[in-house]
Amino acid sequence: MGYRDNFYVVGSIIGFTGILHQSPTVYFHAGTEFGHITQNHWFEANCGREDVGSDPGYTIGNETQPNGIRASVERCSGVVIHSSRSLYTAVNPTEMNTIALLAQAIIAFPEKKRVPLYASLMGAYKDNDLEQVLESLDNRQQANAQIRAGLPRLRHVQPSMMKGSGA
Image (cartoon, rainbow, N blue to C red; front, side, top):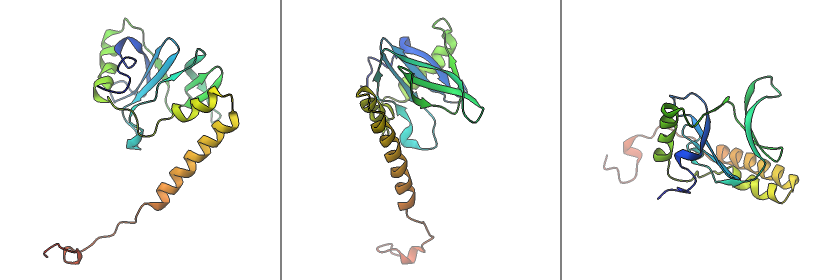
């Protein structure tokens, strides 16, 4: 069984960002719950099922960003919780071929992301503590910087230099 198999179902698919035939991010919404499955991202831990959020004021649509580019923006009761780099394309349930392509993400990615976005933001959002939301985002940026800085610099090692290599 995968994470929230009762939510991540074909009937909850509402749209996607990215290019349809190139592993797009698939968006889901049912009742007050929402989430998405990221299929392709440069940071592999960001692929998979997003923590399911819940808010009666959830919306998703395309907006012009400060840089002048139109892209997808998700909001909960008017507060931006996620901005994409891609346009959002809504899908009508009668578009069976498109739904079938998008539904492949449900099977391909049954597990929850290792770096969930909504969980960290929604807890703070539900408490109406904008400072906590901003601190959460800042902490994530700092953590990413520390991870990048702490990665070992790889160098070529001769097999004869490796302990127990037998060379």
